[in-house]
Structure formats: structure tokens, C-alpha cells
Image 1: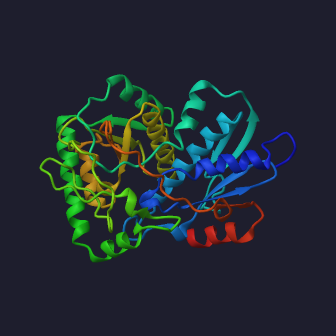
Image 2 (image 1 turned 30 degrees about the vertical axis):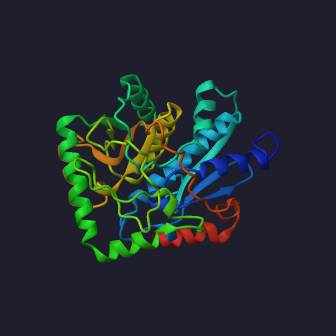
Length: 340
């Protein structure tokens, strides 16, 4: 970038933090491009999962999470970001253009940035310790700052949400094409993407436990004494007033804000998108849980058991694979062609 803007080292550090964001099946569906004065986020349609995510909603949410990670990373490095979302209607895969201004980081921004390398998707059982109401209020505030509504599922909402999760899980189990895709993106040991065996526990069939995805070759053990979802695990629903591409991108930013805030408090977290991946099941969640708004993300959070081992980091693609100069023609043309 030009003099007076973030140098290459700063950009590389921030983008390396941005690509730590979560995405469905760890598909990492983003590309970043550096201009003279701006940084750009593009969707990578080659990484859309046709059986899991046929309309690209999860892809946009994952890219939004990466965008928020980038905003927090740059803020902690002393750069305020002005984000222009969906800046070019002729390039629907061009999701954001970012401008920079010098600004001292706040303590909250530094704390959130420090949570980025510590955040994990923890699919194990959580303990029965109660999550303080003040923590949930802070997470709701962080989500609201991104223009998204957060609902804490209480008894009635939790029942309908659990029913939707069970229905989606059952239908996915009965779908051969979905099972093939899930197997292709899980059970990995050396790949730079997908869900590694070491990060996936075996499916828990204990009474009262929410169904989980049946990832291939799970190797992650449960901590001794861990309880199931019938105790004090919290279910959160993030929803938006509309369901356009901007709303889905902002929902991804809100997902990142919620996960980093929870991680800052020491909570374990796990995104649950399966009940929102089937249109009719998602409509049920919309009507019964989200009060007529559009549900975009379900989060499970709670306290990991005291004797739970730390989770290993999931792999990420090399920075050189996802970061390029803005004038790299195939980056823009490929995105444009595949989105039309």
C-alpha cells in the first residue's frame, strides 16, 4: 500500500488473523486482494458446498466472519477501517472494500484480537456451570453493533429449535449426496482445510443431547464427567430483518463478534448451521423461534469441563493462497463469472 497506510507486514498479519475465522466445514470460502490504498474481500465460489449450502448463505456468513476478524485485527494494530460492503453490483463476488485511518486501539479491541487465535469450535459436551446473564448481554450488545438481533432460546424456543436440529440431522443422514460431501470435507489429517479428525468427537447419543453432524473418522475424546445439552448449555439465534446478501454478510460479522466476545470470557462455542440449511426447516425456526425475522446462525455456548484438554487449532490455507494483489485478473474475473 501507499506511504501512510498499513505496510505489507501489517496487512499480512491482519489477513492471517482474518482467515482464522470459522466457516462451514472449514471450507474457508474467501479471497483477499491488496490495492494501493484499499484491501478487498472476495467470495471464492469454488468453495461453496452444493449439498450443504446450495444457496451460498453459509458462504457469505463465513466471509462476513472473516471480514469482522480483519476489522478487529487492524483495529488492534492501530488502524480504523471504513468498510464499503458489496461495493460493485457488476461483481457480486466482491464483498467488501476497506479503507484505513490511523487510530489508537481500545482495550476492548486488543482483547478481542487476542481472542482470535484462542477461539475454537468445540463440538464436545459442556459442563453444567451456568453462563452469567451479564456475559449474554455483552454478546447481545456485540451482535447488535453489527445490525443483527440475538435471541437467547428459553424453554419454548429451545424445544422448537431442538426439534428443528433433529429434523435436519435426520434428513441429512438420509441424503446420500449430503453424506458424500460431508465425508469429503471431514476426517482429514494433513489437509489445510476441512474438519480434522482430531477436532471432531463421536456423535453423542445420550438422552437430551442435540444431534451433531456425523463427521468422518472422529477422534476427539469427551472430557470425563462432561454433561450434555440438557443442562446449562446456551443456544443463541442470530437473525436479521431481511434475507438479502447484505444481511447474510452482516450476520457473518455478527457471528464473529459473538464468538470472539464469548471466547474473551473463556466460554466454549460451537456454530450450529444444520437446522438452517434446509429451507422448510429454516422457515420453522423463523416462525417458532426467531419471531418472524430471518435466522442466520445458531450458536451453542457454555463452559468446557474443568478437565477438558485444550483443542488443537484447525488448519488454514497458506496466506499466499488467499491473498493477492488487486490487479490479479483471475481473482476478479473468476469471481464475476461464477457468480452470474
